Image (tube, rainbow, N blue to C red; front, side, top):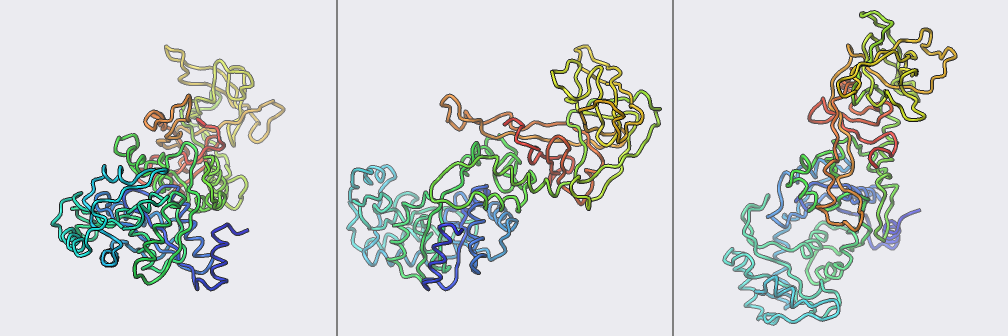
Length: 535
């Protein structure tokens, strides 16, 4: 069944209002894209593909103070990674068109230059229940406004001294229509235009002009822009432009305990809470990519949550489920121990070496098998041994047995502990004849292991949410930052993890881990085997 935007497009095509579909994704290059942007990208790109149209990537680079080429490059890379392959466009390339539109509004008596301060503007705009107050310059002569606007453009006016305002209706019930500022003076170097411009358009003025110049048929925004749509339409109705786009709004993506604000994400980076915009804990597309998320999983997630008209919050488990399903099908299995504990086989010689066969994927025989060697000294995970086990503990314990994955059943024989009573070395014996056969022994537990002589050291990292849950009325962002959102392990793994052609693996009984794109010894837990770790 089509969603409400698809229904609109289908009606527009059937009625002949549009001949072909043109959508756009218009990020501001003032930060990295996050998972919420992925929903918008997938929606706009998906609509263009479904109806045989095109989707533009257009940077809304109208604020030189916050924009940077680093962000431009990261956004292009992320959008291409998600499947887009069109042209890269820039709103700043239309500055001349925007300027001419502004001059035209002044000449038509629909815009005027004002010297209002932000504080005055706030007072004079009124409230939701009280109308605004006309500025003393609202009826400034047209020629005077034109002359002042030229001085603004020439750089002869200080920042904040003058603005250009649209002359609409100070009594409008929509505050956005109460003579909004459409141009301001900014003395800064633009990342593409250099110092050519001293005046810059506001987003609400630039956005509809950019859409019209590019022939956008369906300008799809999130719900916070719904109250801005009358101004969008006013600009299109009062400026001479080559086409007439239409704006439609959908619910933005909100995920529980996930930061969906570039301002707060930037704060985490600036404050050193994370290691950068691509830290694997970050919900940025760059961070998710580094953690091991795939474009297929993100597209699947966006498809599953659908397109709605009302805001709501999505459970984080829905996103995790998408990548878990993908990796369950594609990731080879491997043994690793996050917290290594030495296990010595007492009934084998020092040079013991026995090859066992392990499935690379138990449900996909076409992925083959690998050989791995049992030896005299192994490592098991410290969590898989206990001198004082709780009830129903099915791992290695005194007077107990456990099966080594793909190998024999072993029986506990002893343990060395340090002065604090912490186990340092565990001793066990192989139960003969149990390679692939229980020999009548009741053995409920199976644990992973690695051969001490044939393993590699890796840095494994597991993650929790960056935000703590809202409890006891604590909603302040700073108080909710989880300072224990990353746990590092000096782990050991099969040499199989060094296979250059594979980056993502299932660490058996632990989770899915992906090799870091920057440091090949680091493996990030992409997602746990089930929703259990620190959740």
